[in-house]
Image (cartoon, rainbow, N blue to C red; front, side):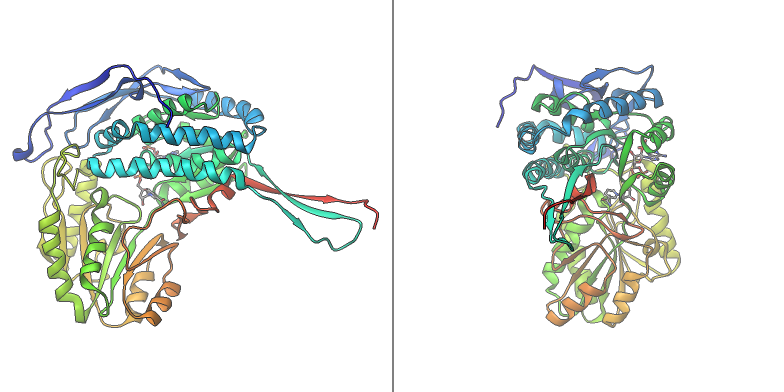
Length: 513
Ligand code: NAP
């Protein structure tokens, strides 16, 4: 690992939590190494201020933890210009050299894992254990793409005539605009940027308003790793500035590619903007994952998978199980065991507390959405077996609902909260039909020990990612991406880099036969 000298620790604003249940009230503060707490934007290798700032809040307490430069369209344009200028040289840097820089960046993330994880916990609310996991996951994309950089092979194809050769060359596409959400403030950036930089592209990153600090800490470490000026730029902005900054990033003719992770609605807005200049686009959008438990399943394993796939980040991941379908013969047993696991394993609290497993939701509106789904389900006949209530601030009780039916709101839309709605079914055909009755298809999970059924259901599910007897799937070696309105393209794996490459056909003719 590269050794980096860090100045003394910097403590950001002491906070008195207001949103927590009374029993949990105490002081929380974000203590991280000073150079990682950046509050200016990062353009062309320099830290840049803006005319105004916007606050970053701890969602657990509602307290301000930092004020960050609020970039507008002019600064976004400067970043695009810088990225375009830097592309002219970065594309000629050898794959081996790009690989070395990415590997150094990976080492630095791992070296500063604790501080980077604290930043995530304080700006997005995630329990510290999960934030540490996110940093390892985030770093793993830099490591993976540092290796993939050296394997961007083209093809030599047998020609149809003897006087020519056919070559297919892969080349970097150019400047990529990267727009990311708050729920994985570090990993959603490196999953894209690792591939982009490995391919020889340069980037402008617009992080979510809620979580700019993780993106800016990545910029600090990119600079320390030797990423050249202009290759990695970060344009933080408030939600007020987002549409105008987004317009620059999606319409500027110097931008060749947009890569977005976020909601399906925003994805459609960005695609429409990018259409005028026909940019290549990757879209990682919303999910509505089915989690099916067949009679033949190992129930304990299914309960473990349900806990892992539902409650990570308090239910705020795009691959979170959103609809639980359980076959009649195993229904009561599954509910009973899942209820017990929820009682014994889940602890609501501030993410920095070591025993917390359930932090706050990102804001009060997100908690209100879960409450509405619960009331709608109850009004239509669902039974609350656990939880059901909103706590102070944006905290939510982990909730288990039985007797859920396919006409309830919670089975029609993404929840993004700690709600387990359980639907009873009788046949495999019925389960697959309910699972596929959605306009999106990102992840899906099922538990079965019947090999014939496993293959049938894998092939029948309309999703981009399927977990068979497994609830945690994400890894840089495999593809990540959805079908239907869950998106376009794939991230991670050997395919992720293709999103940042063009294939050029070279016909080398005039050769003597
Ligand atoms: P979001 O509201 O769509 O926001 C995502 C990003 O888009 C944020 O940076 C946001 O900026 C920005 N944005 C919004 N409007 C924009 C515009 N007009 N121009 C440019 N940028 C714009 O989504 P979210 O609520 O943060 O994230 C949750 C959603 O993301 C869920 O649906 C989840 O399933 C999905 N998600 C998908 C994946 C995946 O890999 N498929 C992974 C994680 C999350 P502001 O913050 O300033 O609004």
